[in-house]
Length: 369
Image 1 (tube, helix red, strand yellow):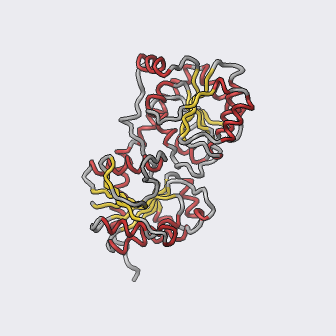
Image 2 (spheres, rainbow, N blue to C red):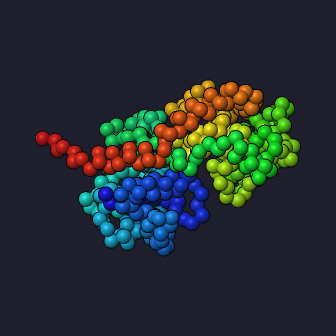
Image 3 (cartoon, helix red, strand yellow):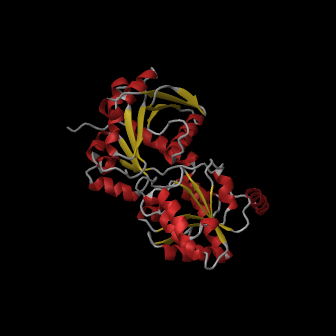
């Protein structure tokens, strides 16, 4: 099957989770015998890690015409045009691109809630797709409430690579901690650091935790840490207990070296509905504390795979962190359950589910008599 992925975020050096998960999915589908082309904005086409990336640039209609122009560069006819975005209106990329592949079926995946007001408009346009995928049932209900036909919507989770994210042995972890210079109890956070990620809540919770534990907070932000976070670190007097890693990290190694991963989300706006950080930690058997958002409660249960607290509640966050640090039996039970659950999100399984969606999209809709 010839499939075009239409997406943003494929500039060189981009570290966004969406690029990582889409690339992983594309390579997996290629290994399964599908022909994948990445269609995106930019000046030059290239091959990157086994993927063919076709780019074009157009200022017209906020760059929407870049996509049909890039698709035209492939000189191919596609069976599936699969668009990825947070904003529903960006299905227009695929609708415009179909001019050059008129028999193609359109699948559109909403990976997250859009951060912009403009990005939350145009849900009705999704009815022009053959299939719309979302990562959670919560998201599906939101689309239905905004007029998207229920029969068009399928829940397809975001993938992780369960062959890359694996738990290390105790010996391997000990050697790794020495190599990384980690001696205290290590609380870990990695990824984006905008307001919805809850980093301010983590910093305050960590301050409470220090009253009970000799710990260090290890931050690996995707981009340089915002000024307000740096100021908060100074104001709380915890600068000597906060370590930042600015360079790109080997995520599986860090997840296996730390004691806890904390994901204090205030909301999932701008974050994948199945956050990669959460799933990656689960696959590595790293204990996790996160927040009880409805979308996350679809994936994991508090006291079953992770500990969950109310968003924007640093005191409860600190108590949950302390509880995990102090209770080895609880850690073992949660991480064993979490590891099993993470396998449901393996990229091979998700790719197989996506192929079923492509076949559904290709089934002709009976005409009304």
